[in-house]
Every structure is written in C-alpha cells, then in structure tokens.
Amino acid sequence: MTIDENEAIVKFENVGLRYGLGPEVLQDVTFSLAPGSFHFLVGPSGAGKSSLLKLIYLALKPSRGLISLFGRDIATTSRRDLPPIRRRVGVVFQEFRLLNHLSAFDNVALPLRIAGAKKSEIQKHVVELLSWVGLKDHLDARPPTLSGGQQQRVSIARAVIARPKILLADEPTGNVDDPMGMRLMHLFEELNKLGTTVIIATHNNMMVEKMGYPKMHLDEGWLEMVGDGSMSAPAPRQTDFEGLI
Amino acid sequence: MFARRSDLPLDKDALSRFLPWLIAFMVFLAVMAMAGVLVLNTVAARWDRGVSGTLTVQIIPAENAVDDDARLQTVLKILTETPEIERFETLGDDKLLALLEPWLGTSAGAKDLPLPRLVDVELKSGAKLDIDALSRRMEARVPGVSIDDHSIWLNRLVRLIRTVEGLASLVLVFIALSTIGTVVFTTRTGLALHRNAIEVLHFIGAQDSYVAAQFASRALTLGLKGGVIGLFLAVPSLLGIGVMAAKMESGLLPDITLGAVHWSALAGLPIIVALIAMLTARITVMKTLARML
Image (tube, rainbow over all chains, first blue to last red; front, side, top):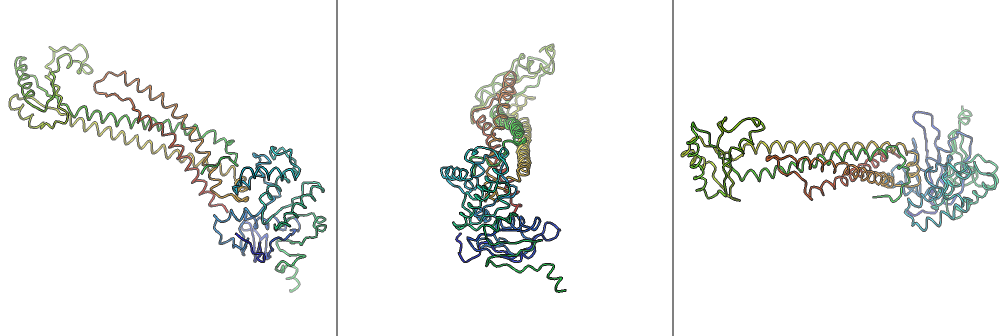
C-alpha cells in the first residue's frame, strides 16, 4: 500500500458517532490530515477526544459519515483487510492496555511479532527502544510490577516500535514527570520527522502552546481545526443557531 | 497453523486444567467403545469362519439302543461316502453331558436321559456341499436324522453383533460430539475471559487467524495430554478384560484378544481427538471473532 503525498492519510466526512440510542458524542466531524502532519487533539473532558481516536484506530464504527484511512474507505474495506491497516496505526491508550501476563519486552515486541519480523530484529529493536525510554533494567518486568509512568512508557514503546504511519496517543504524558514528558514528546517529533502522522490528545495546554503544532479542538462533539491548513468543516455550534434565531 | 508462543494467558485458565481430564474420560470411553467394535468384528468373523465349515448331524434316539447304533453306523457310512467331508467325529456321552451340564447339573447320567447322537462334521476347505441333498439322502435311509449347518443361529448371532457394533459406533459419534461441544464451550469462555487482550492484539494488527492459532495450538496440546491420559487409563482396563476372557473356558467364545492393527487404531484415537479439539477451537474462534469489528 503506497501513500500519495498529496492524498489525505486520514479523512473524515460528516462523521457522527453515538453509543447505542444515546446522543451523538461526535457530530458532523469533517477533516483531513496530510501525511507527516502533527496535531494536538484538545478539548474538555467528555468532548469526544477518545471516541475520535477510537474511530481512527478502527475500534469503533461511525454511526454515519465516511472515514477513509490511507485512501481506503473503511466502510467498504473487508474485515480481512483491516489488520494491515491497523498495523500502520500505532496507538498509545489512555489506560495503557498492556498485556499483564507478558513482560515489558514481550509487550513491546508484539507488533513486530504480529508483522512477522525476525527474532534477531525484534531483540535488537525492542531492547534499543526500551533503553531509550529508560526501561533497560525492566525488560522482564510484568506491567503490574511497574509504576504508572513506566507502564506508559512501555505503552508508547509498543505504539512506535513498528514505525507506524499514523501515531495516536491519548494523554501520553499524563503519568510521567515533565523531563520524561518532554523526552517522549521529542520521540514523537522524531517519528513525525520520519514521516509519521501524529495526533496527540492532551489536556496539557502548556505543552501544546510550547510545541506550537496545530490543534484539533473538540467541544461537545464538534470539531474545529485551529492553526493549520487542514480541511475542517465549520462547526455549526448551538450558539450559532441561537444567533440566527 | 500453530503459534510457537502464546500472547494470551490461556495456560492460566481454570478451564485449561479441566479440559485434559474431560478429554481423558472421553478418550477412555472412546477406546473402550472402539475396542468393543473391533473385538465384536473379530468375533463375528471367527465365528463365521469356524462355524460355516462345519455341520452337526443329529440322530434322534429310537426306542432301543441297538437301533440307534445301527442308524449311527449308516449315517457314518454316508458321511464317509461324501467327498466334500474332511473328517467327522461322533460325540461321546461324556461330551454331550458336559454340554448339557449348565442346564441339567452334574447329577444327570447318560442312562437317565434319551440323549441324541451327535456327529460333528468338518468340511474340506472351500468345499461346496449341497446340504439339502445330503439331508435328503440321509432321511431316506435313516428317518429322524437332521443336519444343522448353524446358518439360522449364525445369522441371528451376526445380526446381534452388528447391532451391538452399531450402538458402539453411535457411542463413538456421541463422544466426538461431546468433545466438540466441550471444546466450543471452553473456547468461547476463553474468548470472553481474554476479550481485552484479544482486542489489543486486533488493534495492533493481528489477523483473526493469529488469535485462532493460539487457541488451536492450546486445544491440540490439551487434547493430546488428555488423550494420552485416557489411553493410559483404558489400556489396563482392556488388558484386564482380555485376561478375564481368556480364563473363560467356553467353546462358544473365540479368542478375543486384540491384534497389532487393533492396538494401533486405538493408539490413534488420542491423536484424532486432539485434532478434533484443535479444529473445533480454530473454527469457534474464527466464527466468534468474525462478529467483532
């Protein structure tokens, strides 16, 4: 699967999402991200940030609208063709979602093993990356024996080990101290420089302002793109309707 | 098809500890049922071979013993003149009484009962004797003689054996279905228990077949383990039955020991059960995961 540099790597058109019969948590979300872009996904708690990320890493199906990843309409993509797409999307889950019965090494090695990498390559890359995130001495440690910050770093290492084309991170620096947080952000920047499209959901406004990347601002399910040329539909906010009335 | 290592903690499931024993009991029952089928098959074949080449001539006792002797000599003469007959032997009173002992006990004597004269006849191998013609020849010269080629008894016996064989085969089918049901249940439970980990594997890009291979591999291992346990439980039982059968000194009961081919077939049962478990687990996982995103 090759990617056209001019083609959007992530494209949402009028996407709506509701859980069951509840209200829409995402409403008419429309945007497209160019390959190699870097965005912060910001907004208050409950705005729908995690739901938006779940749609991108194919954990949820939209209630309406069109989603395309790497130029492929997800609604018409067969189930068999989804795993190769997912392998190109690295995810740092807010709750880490590490496999507790596996060591830190094995957790990080999972994406490479699933992709069928050679044992020697897995050994080399995993040890290298875990060393880089400061966990060289915890290769054999099981997640429950690690602190929240250490688990978060294992989770990040797992998300980036296979050099994904898209990296999604939900509050990736929430459990680490500021120096480690900046170190991890630099890791994301390095990946971005290598061509990975990065979306980071965060509440850390200071970090967002300091790094200066464009923002995807979500509020009550409506998305607004701030600070870049990526396409975004104007959000028909409730207040707008009130003004019209 | 097999994953060399497992990303799911299937070993730690309580059901994983329970499944081998369940499969062991299934294999035990399957081995016993299959051994029954094999033994019955052998017995039927041996009875068929043993009885179809023999005849029994029965001379109903007359009023006085002298006549009986004369009639017997005539019958023996006819038998001697018949080229298809290999050998014949008149059963003495001792043998007749021994045959009747289960019904009459030991107190009855030859003088107390009007015993028929029996002649045990063995035909030449492959010989085609016209029983009806022989019967007519004898009846013409010695009234009250009957020839029994055992066909009625043999047909009934073979029908009975085939029925029991059919039932034993049905038991094997039920055992296979029970094994499949058990594996489906344990696999579905495993999928529910490890749903979170399976989701993570999916998000990382694992195909359904990757997850299914881990369940299939586990089911194969547990199936083989249970199968071997079941076989080890069944073999002493079969040997015990064989020893008991050998001790029975009955002319009716042929040797019912199992041959090398039979033992090989029984030894293959754990492998077949393990393969059934593996395939069932794989199909169950693939079908269940197909309903997930």
